[in-house]
Length: 202
Length: 202
Image (tube, rainbow over all chains, first blue to last red; front, side, top):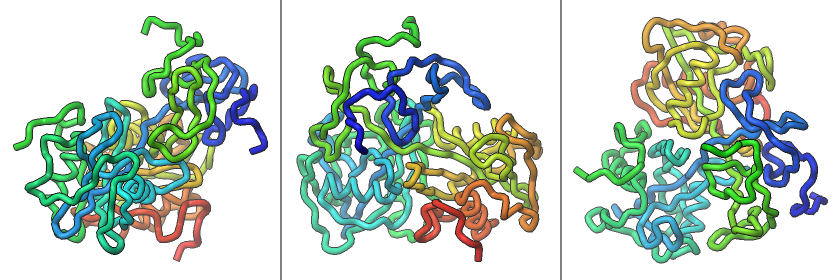
């Protein structure tokens, strides 16, 4: 783009291309035609500023019966262990996003085997896509910028009390129930659990 | 909230709570700490304006070997047939989003059976979650506001040349390969097909 991205053009209301924060127009709340809830709509051009949930893509990568986990170097939950996972970026596929996160957080080159789970965390408007994955070649990995440490854990050595997020716990426990299975229906949230806090393990 | 939503407060950079278009601060492009790509960052408070893909949730609902389709009353693809589906809203689960869309577009009360497919359309930064679903009770439906007509089609009567989107075609054809199966691994995009145009059917 030839534009200065830091300037504030009067109008560039093309969703997906320009950034709402560069807009200069004023907005009002009303219900767009054919819609059924209030949105912020530009008073000048009618552009509707839809707000939607975000996607987290991640992996459960197992090698020799050991699971790959990352110790977080950033907030939230700095110092806690989690699966390689993060926000999907624009212009990539979900699988690409999951593998990119494994590369960024664990310097690991993986390949997707199957979708393990789709979790919804309505409180923070997130959908999490967790894939079963494996190393493409040798099991090489190291701490990326968002990790303090990356390790392959035997099941019994997983730091269960130091997991960063409820969904990491769900994915690990659900993975165990299909361990070795070649094809399975993906999991969703444990019944009635919306990830608002850690539930006690059985 | 006691605030006037149309006002422009100087600073309310709490992601997920307030709206970026109400911000008054100026933004610069730079790479946040621990990140690896440029984002728009507030010059005053450091708030990072992440842009991420959106989720479409929808259903393949079959009753008596007939598939539920909606003829679109809105652009894009007005007048073409599609599966009940639409953008997920904040604060709901993916399954809830799919069922809500069926309610809005087809006045149909459904229940989710299993995840059928996860499609990625990188060109428009969409992830589509398509669920296998069935009627909760009697197969009652009618055109919602975004539909001109809603019908149950026998497989051979599906208007293949008048489908609205490539992913509707994918979902229908893939559904057929697991017809009657109780449990299966979900599908993804057909190999090498990113949904940029309709590929010729075999």
